[in-house]
Length: 115
Image 1 (cartoon, rainbow, N blue to C red):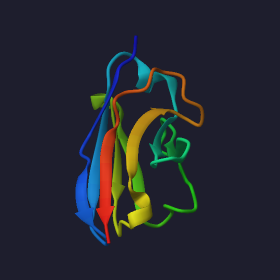
Image 2 (tube, helix red, strand yellow; image 1 turned 180 degrees about the vertical axis):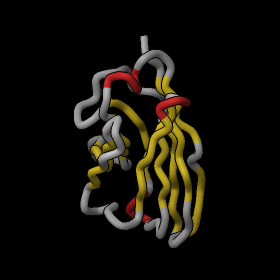
Image 3 (spheres, rainbow, N blue to C red; image 1 turned 135 degrees about the horizontal axis):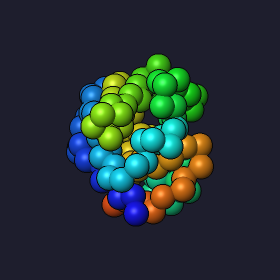
Image 4 (tube, rainbow, N blue to C red; image 1 turned 90 degrees about the vertical axis):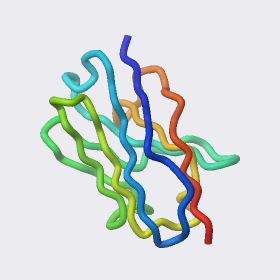
């Protein structure tokens, strides 16, 4: 059973930066595309970025140019570098396979952006 553990969240002011990490146990990274998702208060969870095993990335328009997804296949880890954060980026961030989640969700990591 693959387990996903997200970390790196925190509280920052608007305009700040954070880098999230997602460590996967098992063979998740041998499958292929991974993604970062987020769920804001009162909203559905949404996919914001994906990365193939070969490094091809796709971003949701709301984060394009500000967020960068990357992965280290040897470490079974996927990252999300977030810059120029906005209050609307406040959410719990999760990783999973992309573009459709196939593993059990981890606990997520909270990102809070204050204006």
